[in-house]
Image (cartoon, rainbow, N blue to C red; front, side):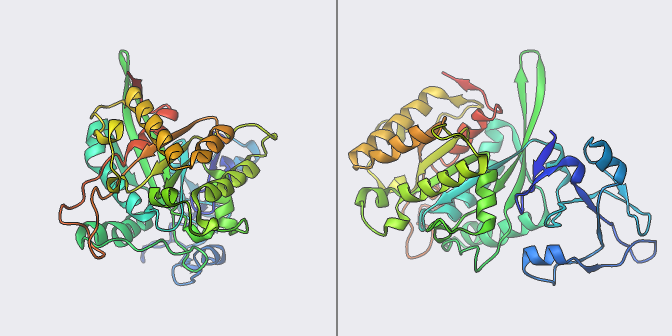
Length: 382
């Protein structure tokens, strides 16, 4: 792995460029005192959280030889060893696990009111509990900010207070950190075990941030760096066929696709090698039959027959709703795409709160399981 992508500013970094931050002083021993890190303050928009021991570049020998970054380095000012690795562009900490594993950035995009925040909250909860146990995976937050943000903005209001989550605020007015998790899994291959891991980066993009092609630089870099993408679509918006054209699913998907093409500088007409999962949310509000009426069979593999049946049923729904252009566009632009139906809550909410039946997720894991299969972390069976 010769380079990585910073999960905060999404800059592509040669491994030998990864910097360090002094461990600082514990109060008695040697170590550098905190000082304002202007680059970090510019990223966070606040100087309050950017007073830290100093950043320093990797040792010159590492940069000269180009053999990747060491796990530790001595601070050139105080001489103390440190293992705190840092992005040289934005000066955010790079979790050690992120530097050592094949990071996969999964972009999550949807129009306003498509249920992005609720989907993230429930998906991560399921990965930590039911789905984690089923697949034999472990999901661990890579930094303290991810732990705090998930508890504050997602878990506590939805699972603790049973309140619906508000619409995602625009990153232009409310800067926020991505959620960065290490997902590990032991895969049994014939007579041996293979430990596999990837870093899951979720950055919940607000619908209004993608209403025009004049998106912020951060969103541009985020989408250009994505290894896979999950589009969330409100089926009621598709069925109505009306509303604001800027917020229509086909237009938002087209804008994101354009950014993905620009970020990869692909020849005209070549399909994107980025797997795209398009999920209809809130399907509990629709009369359903066939594959979408059945729960996914619990197994530590992807049921390819079920996957194909759901894909074809959602595809048929799109054409029934006169939205077949969405399927045609995806088949033209993406080498691999999948259609899904999910429900994060599993029931209709009541006056801003979770319904009386509680949170009963339905197939929320399907898009991610398909992506894990695309990444080679999950077998497919028929």
